[in-house]
Length: 195
Ligand SMILES: Cc1cc2nc3c(=O)[nH]c(=O)nc-3n(C[C@H](O)[C@H](O)[C@H](O)COP(=O)(O)O)c2cc1C
Image (cartoon, rainbow, N blue to C red):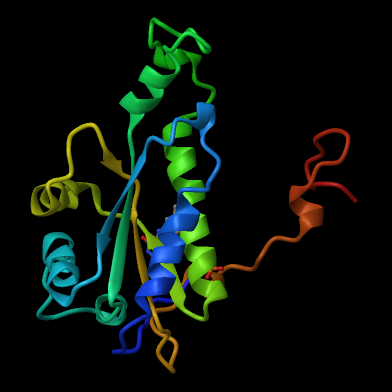
């Protein structure tokens, strides 16, 4: 994840491709219950930070680097779209009971689409960062960009050219990457993973 961006525009065709690829993510029941708020003008991007930051006039290192990103995408998921889709005859969950869902597939699908956005950007030589919207700021984001009630933002993605210097450090500076032997459990689950 890149958290420090150069003050440089991006090729709009790359952003278009990233969003097109997002629509090729897998989705449960092909529900496609996602929506992507695209902020790609300086004014719209600024409105995002005004809505979510405590103060954009005195930004910390993270915010200073992130605010320079020329594009912000807010991927959203729609639980109701999934409940409605699965109430259709080929699925038949007409009670729309949420307990039927092993995990919230609406968030999963928006997350998979988000990864395709990130991968497309990185593939084109750009940087990206998926990050959370503070819960107490969600209402302000909805209000600023007229996000309807039936959609929930799952986070936000900055996209742009990485600046020369690293910006705010991410957790990998403080934590080591786990090896596959620690997380893959072959045949049966073993505490330390497979050997
Ligand atoms: C669901 C999710 C939420 C995240 N939230 C934040 C965030 O709020 N701020 C941030 O700077 N990075 C955020 N990240 C980025 C992670 O910190 C980053 O992916 C992780 O530390 C691994 O680093 P890498 O992606 O550069 O390998 C988030 C990533 C995910 C998948």
